[in-house]
Amino acid sequence: MRRAVFPGSFDPITLGHENIIRRAIPMFDEIVIAIGVNGSKKTMFTLAQRIQMLERVFSNAPSVKVETFSGLTVRFCEKVKADWMLRGVRNGGDFEYERTIAQMTKKLNPSLETIILFTDPEFAPISSTVVRDILANGGDVSNFVPKAVLDFV
Image (cartoon, rainbow, N blue to C red; front, side, top):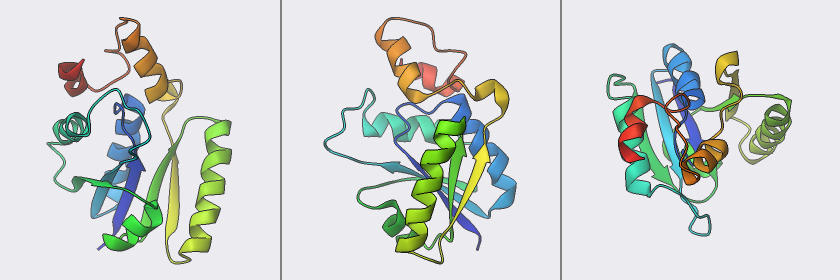
């Protein structure tokens, strides 16, 4: 089975995340969206809300699963028997960061491959950080997140 893990905090999921995942669906038999849990990181949305958001957004995609994990992403990939880690890139800064992570991942597990997809241009400026800032200041995020997320804001 061709299984990929797409890790992140998804606080919240954005249209950019959705774009990457939907474009990757034909490439894999299963995509596990892995919500990283870091107790020291403050999030806007609870873990339960983030799980619900993702499950609603991909309710029509049976090959997409949502799970949570803590610790090293590479260990989670091993646990779920994924041979690929899926990552999304919006710009050159993201690319440099993701290249470093991919190279370190390869050192930790030489059989785990990182697949990087560039987001479609219209989603490149969108980040969860900016979406959270807009929300915190009472702004409208409907052009930046999937419709299912709007039920949580």
